[in-house]
Image 1 (tube, each protein chain N blue to C red):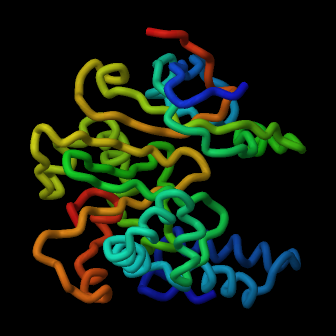
Image 2 (cartoon, rainbow over the protein chains, first blue to last red):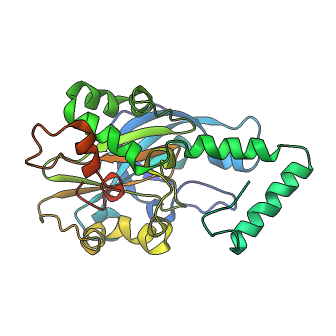
Length: 91
Length: 194
């Protein structure tokens, strides 16, 4: 999966038992890819001692405050490994 | 290692020391090696380092461009080696203000900004900065015009952020060192204008 900036994506729902880096407040919400930040080991695998860990593209994804909280004009940008994301299609 | 700074009696200091003793006892590292790791980490660990980067970026457009494209390389140019994370510099512009937070823990470019302030690690800051940054900034004394867009950056990956504040007005001709003296730790986090 290689997604260009501007692609609308959804952070996956779900609450794994192990360490993950998807903050709860973005789960199930849609955002837009801002940039590809390179490939990094998946923290979920690293924390469980899975060797070698999956190495995935990490995308900076921007969420609108209105989409996250129902109000607000600001945006929140965070970095999400590709397995945290699913394509959401045009809104 | 010596705890110093009057923190030696804190429970966390005792816990850290116990861990160190276990590591040393197991022959994994010596006291000297542990001290060397910390010395390396904290060698330039002060907001003055971030401030020097900012002042250079204000004076040198080429440096500013390099800083925004490859933060690690640009920091190294000034003698601040950054390793273990990717430095992402986000620039304030007229009508656009950036704010850094780490909602999952307290990630922060310690080597360039110094140890993070205690409020940066507080649950209140971490939960409110992403939800209502405007009132949070106002509590820090930074009241932004209503039309200023606020971009919050949550440092949940291996990237660490540094805000490049806007150069204050009436500072034309000011030498680099003096410009750096205007930059505060809050300015580098985004809780202050400069």
